[in-house]
Length: 411
Length: 154
Image 1 (tube, rainbow over the protein chains, first blue to last red):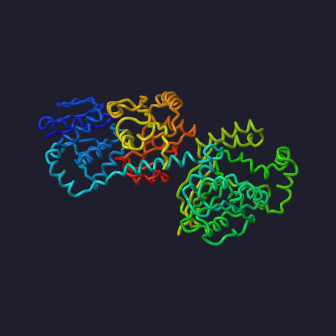
Image 2: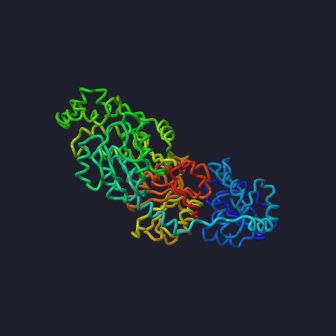
Image 3: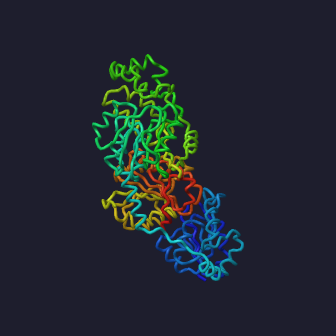
């Protein structure tokens, strides 16, 4: 019989298999692609063969013996059943994933797993019958249609390239947009602030966008800048002014840590979300530099905060935001809240699950950004741009300081 | 569906992971594809006629090699200015995914066909850096909960 042996292109030698084929060379016409092995089999051989030649040799062979790499599928696609030998982590490759793959493939696939190489000659001798049986009994799943793969890759790239927040220093916006761009129906942004996110979401997606915030000044600004968005005022606690199951998606971007009760708000979100609806939630995470969180300065260093804030934004703005508390807010925090919470990831996942959400995606951003955020808050426009770029890069490379979650409302 | 031609940089070692990228031919052949690939018998023959930068083999176990690969990766990315970087493995791709991330270039990481549950070290690093993880095996969802199952490529 014509026997092809191939050990792939790995830099790791597969001496065990090359030694095992030596007895075959006396009985069959064997060609061996030996890779980096120094073992010389008594048959025609080459360390590596070009891809096209390998395909031709697979087609021409009566029996193909291969390592349990991706070549297994190449042989199967050629209408044959390979005899496969798994490389192990004992000097034959970096890990045992070939062993795992071969165990799985041999369970129901068109492959003969050869674990005992002393029995390789018998396996080759009886292979034609085994091959015919396996082809008759076991099906080979077809690869995904090429058109489907191409369309998916184009669509994913398009979504990444179209993300209007891809260069924004705060990565939570890019994350939220990416999650919501494929959604449809009514969307609610809770704690919309000046409308930077919801305004862009409304302009770039088919979502019917609504926004709520406890700060009347922010709402006036959103109404003025984004008239297509329906805005409503909400109190810092209490029910959301919408009926049950009204929205198909909700965003809560760095808002939860400002609220008096996480549980109350999550319960309300669950109520207004349709079954299967999407919640996109971002929060500051507890991390080694949480102590630098400037949003806690108003609690821990009140005089310093008043001095810097008044210098930066003016005394009248300070008075409106921090002394006049008629809107239930101390700055942007609910009155009664004692800190700008930096959350533990597992605690939030647990709370989401407790309120009937299934977390579908987790991500994060930043590690060192607090070191850049504080000077960025104090700097002039040109210097601020430099620090914002540093924050963006930090967000691209790390994921410890801010946590992002996507969760579906369970039916 | 977008019909605009994109500049695609395909990064690969030789062997099985190269087969994954070759199987994407119907996609990348519609765009401006350029390759950064480890030179080997299979890659030289399989990529005949393609625009190829031959790159050094790297291993996570030889950090010095990874560092020298950084300069080459930087030069290729700056010269080619890809709009998307795609790879299925292995260690040589780390430098490209790192720079792509730092420059805001979208990346696709494809989990190779015969890895069923546990990604290798290079895959773990690249999937942390990538924009999208594309899985050929649904069993990899546990390792990559955010991955998109696309099915087998070939």
